[in-house]
Structures are given as structure tokens and as C-alpha cells.
Length: 160
Image (cartoon, rainbow, N blue to C red; front, side, top):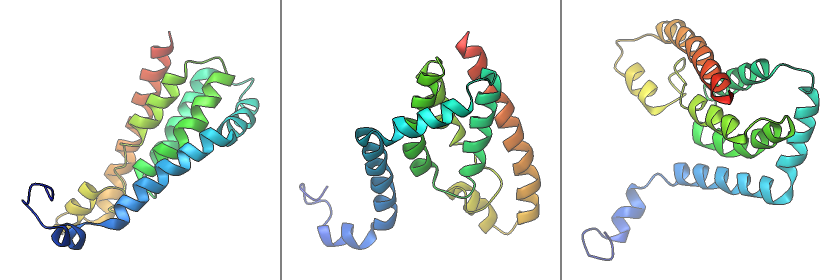
């Protein structure tokens, strides 16, 4: 748009939320660093050893719950970027397809329903004043539990 003269760079610079771009870029950069340094594999190996005698459904359930509740308090994009390489390594160590864990992280990171700070749509709904935080917590908790169950069942049967 700047190249074609539709908008001036000064307008772009003034109206861009650089903090969000830095958050996403930082999350992706940290994810790449974890992968390239081998830290995600090392962390994945340690986590997999803790799950070694655990039924795959329990692992899937735990990972689903972890990511869904984590994204209530942290950026879903940054969380997914950081956790995908770690849990892909866990899946490999456990003999599970890594695509299953990657999909659990990706889908689970999109299931933040409890708090206004979890996602921009939550903040918009809360900002109307028509929904209280107590209502969001109550309904959001039910939606989170339902999401954990559905994501876990889907992932488990996807393994078969």
C-alpha cells in the first residue's frame, strides 16, 4: 500500500500496534530458537519420560487441558509457537504421530472462553457491559471443559 501511494508510511507507523507484532515475532523467534538449539527436543524428552507409562489418552487429555487453560492468561499465538516444537518432540518420543500433538496445540490454543483478556472477541463482548466477568467465568469454564473433552476425543480417535 505504501509502495503504490495508497497510504503514507507515517500513517502506517502511527496506527500500527507494534507491541502485538513484536509479541508474535518474538514468540515465533523463540520457537525457532528452541527447535534449532535442541532445547525443545531435550525438554520433550524429559516430559516424555514422565509420561512413559501413561496411556496415550491421558497424555492427550493433559496436553489439551494445559493449552486450553494456558491461553486464558497468555497469547494463544505465542503459546502455540512455543509449545508446538516441545510437544511434537514429546509425541515422537512416545511413538505418537507428532501431527496429533501439533493439532491439539493449534486447536486448543483457540479455545479461550473464560476471561476478557484471553482474546480480543472476549474483550469486545465484556466491553459491551451486557456480560459480567462472573458470567464469562461460569460459561467459559463449561466451554473449556467441553473443548478439552472434544479435542481429546478427536485427537485420540485420530490416532487410530
